[in-house]
Image 1 (cartoon, helix red, strand yellow):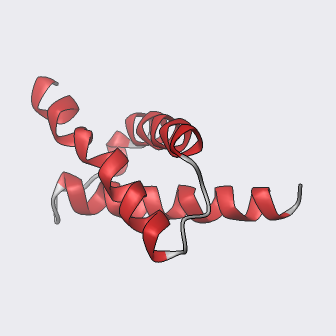
Image 2 (cartoon, rainbow, N blue to C red):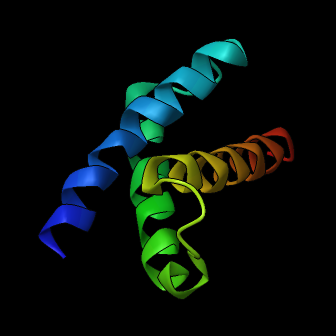
Length: 77
C-alpha cells in the first residue's frame, strides 16, 4: 500500500504535463482537484490494473481521461 501511494505521487506532475500540452486550460487549484479526483478513481479501479505496464503508465491513461472529461465539463459552463 505504501509503495502504491508513493508511486501515485506522479499524478499531479502527469496532469500538469497534460495541461501544458493542451495550452494551460486549468489553474493550479483546478489541477489539484483534478489530481485528487484521478487518484480516487484509480483507487476504485485498482482491480482493473493488470500489471502489464507500470502504475505510472496506468495513471497517465486515467489522468488523461479525467483531464479530457474535465475539459468537456468546463466547455459546457
